[in-house]
Length: 173
Picture 1 (cartoon, rainbow, N blue to C red):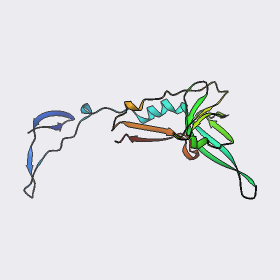
Picture 2: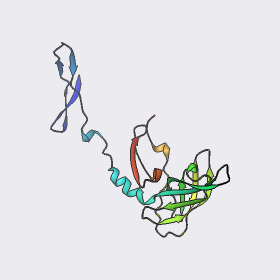
Picture 3: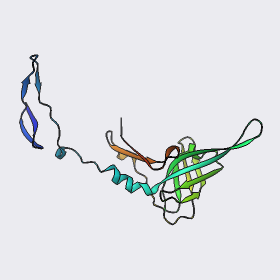
C-alpha cells in the first residue's frame, strides 16, 4: 500500500515496505510525522510572559470563634486574574467566602485590600475590586467553545501561597 517514510527530515511518498520478522510475522514501517505535518506550539514561556502581569495572589483572613468563645485567625490563599484595568478581579468563591479581610498581591509586588463585589457559590466564582493601582493589566475572557479535544492549555496561578506557578495540559473529551 501507499505510505510515507522519513528521509533526512523530509516526507517522501513511496510504497510501504513490508518486513518479515524472525517469527515469520509481517509488519509495516512506522510512519512518524515531521514538523511540516504538525502544528508548531507556542512556547509556554511566551504565554506565561503574556499573562503573568494579570495573575494575582489572594490571601484571606477569617476570624474563627471556638466553643469557649475564643477567637483566632485562619489564613487562606488562592489565585485570581485582573479582568479590567479599573481593578476588577475574578477568583473562586471558596477563596474569599466568609473572609474578614482579603489582600491581593500583583505580579509586580504591590499589595491591596480588596472588597467582594459579588459571589456565586454554585459556580464557585467571585468578583473582587481593588483601588489605587495605576499599573493593572487586564486579561480578556476566552470562549470555551473555541477549544477542541486535544487543544493545549496552560494554567498560571498562585495556589497554596505559591506565587506564579505554571502547569500545562490537554483538553480531554
